[in-house]
Image (cartoon, rainbow, N blue to C red; front, top):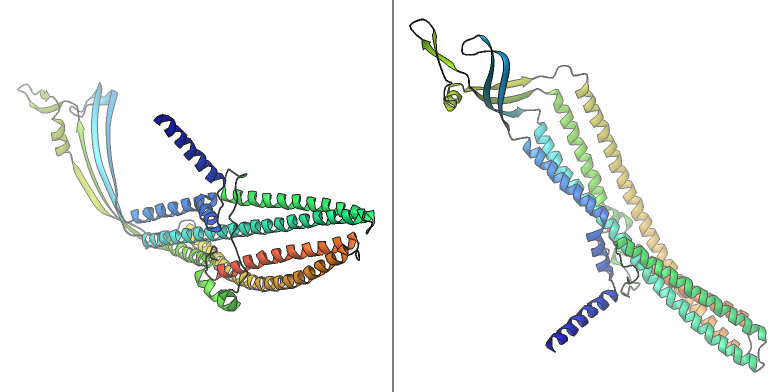
Length: 456
């Protein structure tokens, strides 16, 4: 009995967790955070940052000496000179040698120092690139989120309109049966109801597509059960909109990642010019080497009474290594004189690249200024459009209510009522469209001013 209760409890727990997963409604903050953690482009850029850090390790390694050990063992088979007797003999001899080589750059035109500085700048540039990509994805997610909210509100409007049309159809049937209005009005109302049903289906499909778009942007697999929370975004005054476009631009110029990235790329190009120019300077390298060897051949240790050499076995291996060891060290100076103009051409190429990055930096400033002025103007225009839409809705609401009163007393036909109702519904949709358009455009302006996209 106890096991049965445990099984039932486990089943209910799993079912509850599954139900919660299906009914989860994502907030805008959750959507943005999830996208930043799982977006493929962001992961690729993070790998670029890791690669830049490895490049910095390479640059640090250039200051360290290079040390390499070597060893070899060889067999010589056939006609070889006996190193003991000096005679050519058919024999097999063995030799072992070992060595150690070390080199270090003493002076190289400050290339190593410049490369290290460049590697550090490259890490900073990759971080700015990552920040820019995260900002762009946040903006795209916020736009997709607000689009879903608009489509949800628009679907409510279409459903409400369908309910009103169905009520009007029932009312028209009563008036037709009473002989107050002609049967043609009922046909018009049925056609209107059919059109409203079609509008509801279109609104549902549009909402579904917008959900799918955001789910794909988040790279979720469960598209069907994805939904967002019905967050309330009110139209309210933004302190940022009280700023001038020039003030927003001046702050953005110091804060925006794309400007920092362009500036850092220009600094990297300047380092490349210095590295290329260092090729004109002489380089000084220090070196040290150690070597030793051993032979497995017999050796002559003296002469007997007949004048014949006394031959014995090879000297002990470690004694040979000790006796045959040698050292060499010194300095090597390389002075570039003529290398097919390669150094000069590298300098010219690096200068051209620097000019390109300078132009790109200037262009990035112009683009940022244009985008800010455009975003600010669009936000102002969106607010005017929203206020105009609200005024239009108020007028259309009064006109529609008046039309219903006239229709109910038989002073207006169904066609004119439908026209008034259509204008009323369009006015509602326009208010919603301009509302969310204004909210998003204000967020873009705030985004340039350094305010997080998820802040309400």
